[in-house]
Length: 443
Ligand code: ASP
Ligand code: MG
Picture 1 (cartoon, protein in one colour):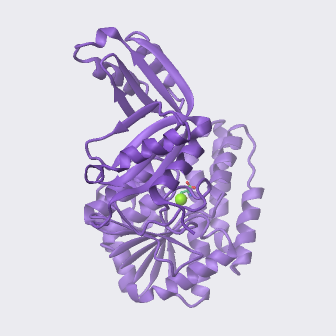
Picture 2: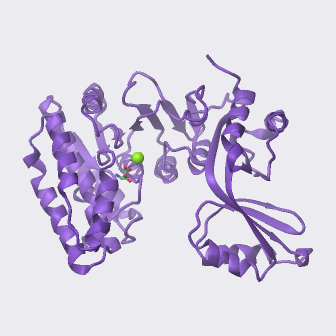
């Protein structure tokens, strides 16, 4: 079986949906299982409708208009999703009645994006002669914990999904399954968190033992850098799971970092492809990656990070100092990305403000604390820096030429990335300079 996941942009306009149909038709001999997201913008619209409903305003007109227009453009009767629209109205009504958008009701509201999407996509495929059937993921076995807004599939999903999805494929169907959503054991609808459809795809793909998980999106694979910053960025043909995880973590927008785990566990390659360029091989992510690859592979960056610096002369030779710092972050649920230490100071980057003030107050009891905001974290991912000792000097030479100061630096023992922090207004320059230095200027 072949798992094919299509994101919001691939199901969000008629031209792309037409491509989707041809892509799935072409894959029929591979026994495709399709996972889809909500059409682009629909999840955002649903979440804002949930917030408005908490203030007593139930508004579904804009969502209905978007959905109806899409289905019409696809040549599908909008009556097909009348039950979902009614369910959505009821869920928003329940929020309005409580005066509060609970996490549980918010997930229920958000779930309708994918539930509408599978119906539209399956109907369009059927109209074109592809024997597609639509399925809400919970009907084919996706059970999760009840951590609304970020639910985790439970281990029992695997056998259930395998049994039910495989039965559909054996019966000659092309199942079109919702990404993003599941159901807790007590039946309440959950979501896996924003961007969670990729994760759903990986969970379903792993369960059915797919030969490959294809993530169809609007970019031609994983790029060497963000093409909006570096126009000459190129597609990386093969990445290892570790390299891909680094890139995803450090802000490459194509793949949700969690996506990779279910695939890794089963050794299933994940391929990122562009719906508008189906013949382009995109990027394939495998356990081993490209064994031939040497040196720099990609440059990721993340804007708007803050650097927290804790200085304490008492740290000298003291044990437990780092532990106390990280406990303070942990208590306030602040996620730390990069860490760099000297004998008297610890610097780390955090990329969100939530909980940061509380953590800073606590850290002030440990040492002298300063925060530098609006920094950009730049991460050079490389295939084994120990075998490519020329990469680090080239990084610093390129930044030095541009007079860009490195404010924090980190390279782990795994030696697959060098990460650094630069001033926010030099972030793009740094990425471009590094790309030029490490990959040259390609036509
Ligand atoms: N529709 C969901 C979102 O926008 C899930 C996804 O697209 O992956 O977050
Ligand atoms: Mg997505």
